[in-house]
Image 1: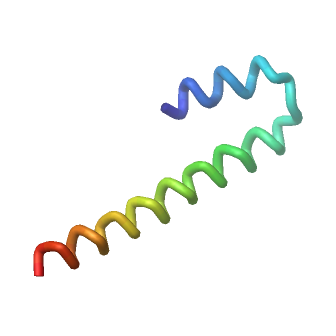
Image 2 (image 1 turned 30 degrees about the vertical axis):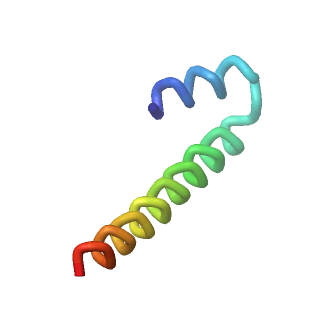
Length: 46
């Protein structure tokens, strides 16, 4: 997934700082979604 993202960002020719920022935001969003999904799974088990 990150490889595809890196290739896509390379083709857009944006600043390297923005590439790092975008990757960080996407990783942060994935983490938040994962934590939220885990909490939903715990609620359904109870």
